[in-house]
Image 1 (tube, rainbow, N blue to C red):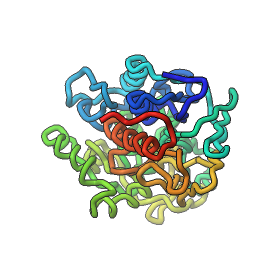
Image 2: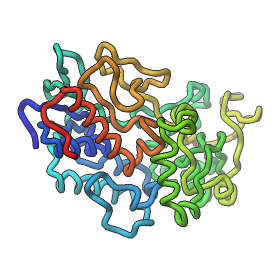
Image 3: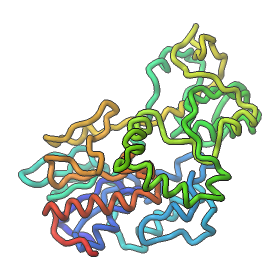
Image 4: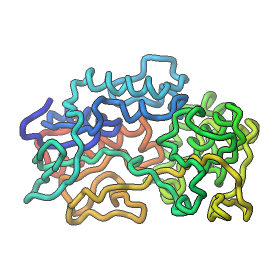
Length: 361
């Protein structure tokens, strides 16, 4: 369902934007999804070759389209990309590809969305670009010897793209741990720097995965005391290690050190000692990049993310967000968690009268 004059413009054609589109379509609202990619799912296709979803298929579905595969399987990144493309076709979502949004501003009670292909106007906007927007690399990277190859995890594909025998992986989240193990298995001398985040063990996921999913979606939520305490830590320091542990990392022959906080003679240093390395892979996450939102009343936090914990901004009717870190709960950025958040935001926009249509029961 699309319109020359959409009631809602969804910015971003990844899982968050598609989930928002599903709920808008069910509500009978005219909308369009603007995707900077030339093909749905390309943001997944660019990830490293061996990447699989951190959560099993049965907990990784967008609304209305369960995975057609054994529930405990973890889909590959390319299978996930194809799943998203099939989702668009199944639900006939109006995705306009190769359309990059460069500015959003107010126009009376509505919004003007400027893109590299022209302008769109609508009373409602849902920003679904996700949290993994701009790679975050510490300032000390500039002080490293220029002979050291540096790349961010978003640019890592496989060990063949990592020159030299000595690799430093910075960041002890799930991505950092998996990349460190893969490099060690490929024969590299690997050092992993950082403090590990809490662990969700793989065997426990397999045996009691439904229990853990309830924790991720219901207990670790901004509506519970434990979730409210957890949210700032997750947003600031990263999500838990899922299906992998520090023991797995050390068992692969990876040396684990403390945080990289300085350089010594051009070498990254941890625990007061320089590390002689050929390549650094920065698995240090991302930060928000929402300066293109020129909307009075919208504030950003210290990490550059919109202050809209449940996806709606007080005092800015018609503007919603989906796919932000811990938007409502720990599962907010996951394929299996984003659908509920998208439904909540769409319902909120409709209830506020920002769009036409009603939300079905």
